[in-house]
Length: 131
Image (cartoon, rainbow, N blue to C red; front, side, top):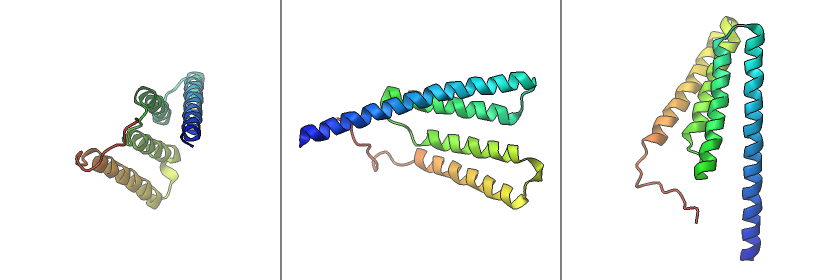
C-alpha cells in the first residue's frame, strides 16, 4: 500500500512540474506577443505594463516553486491585485462609479490579506515538512 501511495505521489509531482513548465513556456510566449503588440502600435500604455508585470510575477512564482517546492501565498495575491488594477484601467472612464469602488475594495481586501499573512506569528503556524 505504501508503494502505491509513493508511486501516486511521484506521478502527481511529475504532472505538477510538467504543467508548471507548460505555464512558464506559455507565459514567455504571451510576453513576447504583448511586446510585439506594443511594438506594432508604437505606444506603451499602463495596461500593457501591468500585463507584462503580471507575466513577470507568474514567472517569478514558478521560479520560486521550482527552487523551493513552495509558493508563498502572497505571490498569487500580488498577481490578483495587479490584475484588478489592470481591469480598472482597461474599463476606463465609462465604468460605473460603484464598480470602481467594488474593484478598489477588492484590492484593499487583498492587500489586507497580504498584511495579515505576512505578520502572522511564526510560532503558531508550521508548514508541513517535505520529508
